Length: 122
Image (cartoon, rainbow, N blue to C red; front, top):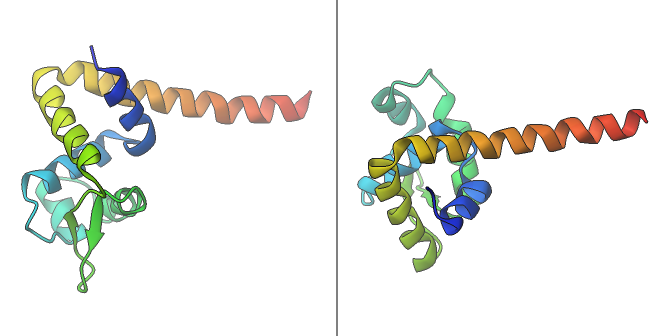
């Protein structure tokens, strides 16, 4: 089972498995700047997939952008750094639980979006 702290982090920062995989790749190589194209290639994503995910991680202040447009892991504080480390461990030890948490959060977002339209129609 994923801890409440990790669930909150996933809710805030991880909108897809692709985002999770990118975050964990960058966390494993904190001194390396990665271009979106290099991440796409490394993780077997379709071309252009990483760019959108990286923008979200940058908005959450988990990565920074270098002058060349490449990104590297740089959480805003030690709390986020510790949470990403815990997420890395949870993903290695309880992969199904973490994947379910990501998908559950996406399902909740979709329900809220759908409910917003349903309320307008009434």
